[in-house]
Image (tube, rainbow, N blue to C red):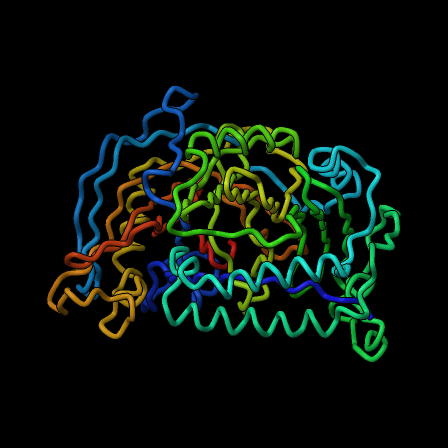
Length: 470
């Protein structure tokens, strides 16, 4: 029997903010279903946001802005305190999802494994692997103080120990049938349906793999800095959703100690990942966010086109709107634990297929600001900000009489990927102005998030619903 590798996954719940939305009498968002309209947050601190180089080719379109106005419902005050706004004359670009190729996987193999002489990765364990996995969990179970030091609560420790024990029992039950060593198959560098990688000998023929087999993957394993690791690439194009991604990850469990200090500094983490990034792709990238949790760093990069970074935010997978993009925004994320890169994920690589011959004609910024103001007045409510009185996020020290504020402290030009209407899989990158900041009420202030309150198309002044992707 093939043995699945069990790993304990620590899940941290992040509060998903819906942005500013409401149901106005008249839809001010052009050409789209507004039932799920929202502008989303990204997990990054305001201080970590990388500003556009003011010395780059660009002109001042607005001096610093100081403004305050109320929403139509009167329950939210929108405060704007933003620095000078600059803009570049850039063209609209046409794009499509880029399938990950075997050559891409070979490139990553050379970067991480130092060779293309690799074997197929199978999610199975040898007897030695099982012994190590059991020992690791036993040590965790016997070190309750260690789990407490890692940031777990007493209740979380109890549930974690219970999970570890279940995994130990499962590992022991599979020990006798586990091989002594890998009987690997050298990769054929072909993408295979999901069932090729996932079927179990005992029940694989009884399962319906028709849906999963719409995704084809190429998975290989190798050694990285003395540890086992694997690289997986997937491609899927279908009407319901698309998948184009590639990731590298260590096979062994790695401890995240939330109470520990990072082994390397923020600057060192960025330097390490930016150097690795140059070897992994030929694209230009920019840091989007840097998050630190104890001994872990998570660094997200976004593509840069014509010296403009691309907007990264959430996308709805549950939309019933057939016009929805169903392809998450492109980004590349590194995880570093104790000074070592433990995983890299590249989501939704895009290919620029053509570029308009002339820079886009952009509206005067006064028109952009008017569109933003109209949108915020109509759409921004306590509910849309997640600040309604019955919301779990509400700070216990606040009262219902304290005003909720949407604080806009950053306005910048970026590229935003949008789905082309009435097309199959066509996208465009359009220049936009992004109005970002944080929500607050009394002593409560959003911390560790940047809320993209409003994204305005710089060419026509329409509001882009990033949640739907157009």
